[in-house]
Image 1 (cartoon, rainbow, N blue to C red):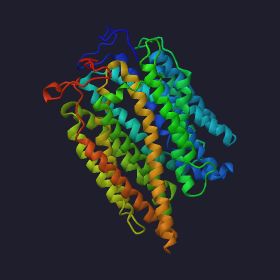
Image 2 (cartoon, rainbow, N blue to C red):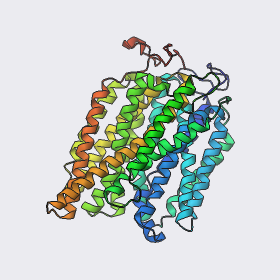
Image 3 (cartoon, rainbow, N blue to C red):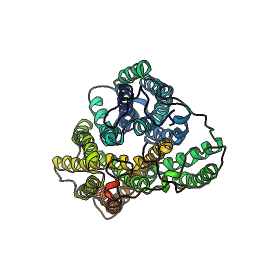
Length: 508
């Protein structure tokens, strides 16, 4: 996203210690809207059994309410880098929020599955644009000395909203029908749309950009194919899918290679722009932080899938009880994320990232101890420990990785992060479900009863997750404060170079 000048104007008032009321208002509205939008990404998991019964659809069909949402996000997000440069903040917000509001109303009033799926897809299209808009706005207008605490609030959106989604839907379904999942959200969406339309001003200057249609097509096949293939691995392991996951994954991988080559070619062109600028990958702080974020999101989404299965199928808890068990972890993450942001501003990322990733690894290791006789309080404790570790990780990693980019790459860095986050969530879910299914099948073949076999498979999956987290532990020692942050120069850090080997600007 480009602005008319790198220096704050009279309306911005952006100093090292303060921001203008206009910027504060924009960020506040974007935060509230993004939280509600991302919350909707995970509400369907708990609601699916009720929907299958009410709409008389099989599981494979109902699963598209989640898969379709993820696919739409994966297809739209890569285009946001150019969208945020081409259009103003106000125009992008109104369009995205209007789509989400319409999709929510359509879902609530849906007479059957096709209309409900259409509503979910429209919701996802609006959601895909909102979070990159929020992140790019923060990176552009929040001073580096305050960026950590503001990114801490974004961490609540990215990590806490998906974590409390199952609890939210579980509590609603205990009393109301599935339509109320959307009816409770609709007034919030309408209020955010009205306030944003009335109050948000254009704090950016749009630029003329070219949308390469070949890149858009390749991006849709690449990221859509990979997300769909990874998401269907769990269904395939249970023999409940029509298309073998290997086919969309292979098609996505081939398209991704072609997409990458196309972006590199466009980056070298003087008169055309890539759909997704890949130069951020040449900055080490961004690459390291992004890889750790992907491991963390894979662990989070894998756990969000397995814990409800364990609690309901192994421990025989109700939907409401499952939601209540998961709620403390989401609340803890929400409390820790802003605190870790403030600590980041003072200490930098490494004192938070290293203990955070060790805590995540420990929690995943403890989760593999859950079995058929484990008390419910143990599941609550280990989930809270995992959430605390993720809360310590998310903010420093986002701030240090995205903050290491030059200003003209903010929108593309945000698009890359959010696109790969969708892939990480799908990959984490696929890994955990596949390991669980194979472990359960192997145990049943040895004569173990189905419930105990499933508990054994879940234990195996969490053990794999702990092993995956050990990779992030090793990477955590490479994380450092961006050289553009206050105090970084005195910490012995050397300026990083962008793709052209030019020093990253000292001021954003």
